[in-house]
Length: 138
Length: 138
Image 1 (cartoon, rainbow over the protein chains, first blue to last red):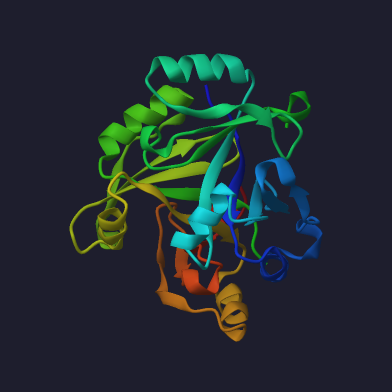
Image 2 (spheres, rainbow over the protein chains, first blue to last red):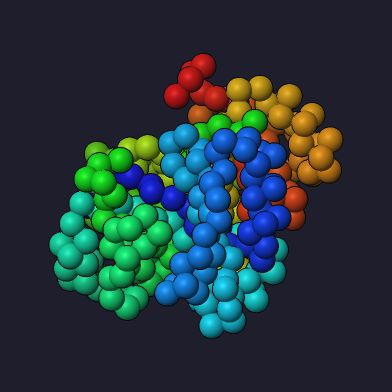
């Protein structure tokens, strides 16, 4: 079963400008530093909303999947929803049994635990990321 | 300043099918009953993720703003992000001063408190709903 919403992924053409935007909206204390995830082809930054986070995502190159999203949505926008699961392998087994398509194989995500993406066509049009619960809890 | 993420709005062509989908993912106890918001032209249903909610939204008629979204995204998908603010009037004053456009005037939302939407072009491509914090807290 899916658990808490770990974060909402928000694509942006400029993480620098987005950090300024969210600093105005939430205050500087809620906006983290940006860092690269080269193996995923993105630069990210987390914004803390108190109960969950926004993950700002800027592509590092044109090969990044987020680059395609920005080609269709140049201003940026909501990219994915990430839910926590306690056992990623069990979740993949259960979802695959219902016909849901897993995109690729699990890899280490921005929070240091294993993640995987699910095809939006099997998730009501929503690109879903599953993340093994960080730190054994929240 | 913006506060917690009250919910993620997810448009769907069939709230009945989406309730079945999210019941499989989160369990029946997390999926509320659907109800109409005729003044907004939508039927909605909340899914509890523990720390926040998803608001499933099906248009009641072709005049609903969500009908246009579904015309562009027939499978449904992420529609808006709703953040809580303690004082909606103050938030509108502050945002308007920065040039952000407020869509229409405040009205009563699904949680019984005043809401307003902000233009996605001023919010990094994200359609943002602001909601006066329900019940004086969370």
